[in-house]
Length: 289
Figure: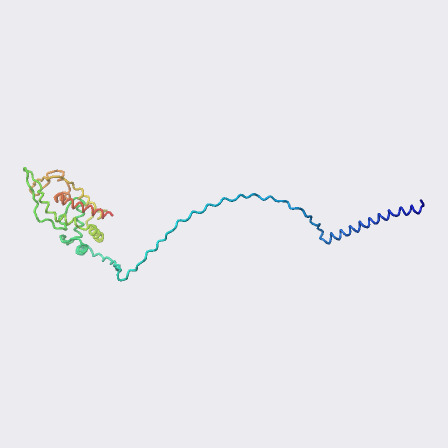
């Protein structure tokens, strides 16, 4: 082989290497252009979706049905029937109580208002009755009786006794002398009686101030008098007497030792005494309210 042939053979491989290098450069330039023109982001690679297992949800239990509400029955409102004006009762006007009189002029006013209240006053002595009632209450609270302070007329018939086997007794027929008086007292309207006392109490207190002991109160003294009378014993059978020439006395020492107010109540007899005590209890109850 000649030298010229050898030289050509060596040149070919050198040219082929340059061509390869040139192609590689061109390819790199194209790739760079494509990179920059597409924002520098690589093409997304399609990947198959990963299957997601769905949780098994159990069917919810059905909620209980609400209980039906009870049916509310609405009753119709009652029809209001207007009352004609002429059928309405007029409301009475309450008149104020008149002022009290002074003490010296109070007795006839007291009797007049007592009669207006339905209290029977025909047996009452109206002269100075306010002061007399106060004196009577004060004396009875001490167990005594002041005859001059009595405001009702006593029986006109005489006290009757009977003798049995040389022993004197109260004749039970003599109790009838007090029937009218005891029945009058029992039939008095207790509420009207106490209401009248409450209205005139300032005058009664004024009269009591004229005779009272220091520290005593009229209402308490009245209650004391009632207690004395209610404590009167209830003996049974005929009541034996002694004739002391001046007056009859009880033969039983215990009865004779009783306060005069209680001995007077014994002389009324058991039936009349029961009426008087019943009324006294009613009066005491009202006064203590």
